[in-house]
Image (cartoon, one colour):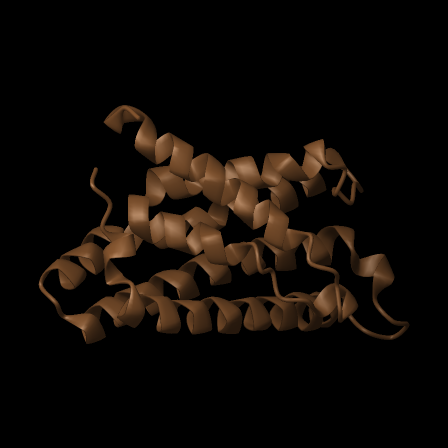
Length: 185
């Protein structure tokens, strides 16, 4: 395969993997971790922000193709299925520092960068979901509960669980397969 095609093909594969993992049955309703976030953080750390954002966009668009979109309004769909999924690609912001630490065999520093990148990406994604929750999903809040608190509980729980799962995978994958994160451009 041409070296020019390696990164785009990887992006497509990781976006497809993210979508596949998103199809894991819900076990806690709205409070589920997003397993699809795992491949998005991995591709973002491997290929950087540009390709991470592209993978997030493809992942979001795959929800439309598979009819997995909860539609309330155009703005809500744009926030939650385009911007929020693309936000996972922001983990790539620290990819250069992360990869430099890997190349110089500074495992602890590399793990720190990877964790920080994951925290940032998951935080931004769930901040977007939180805002959408306040604006669009407030009618689902139990009687007497504010939209702000309801959205915080639902999205905070899902975001926290997602972050835990992503950090566990990074904590296992980084020490065992650091070369995965260093592509042959």
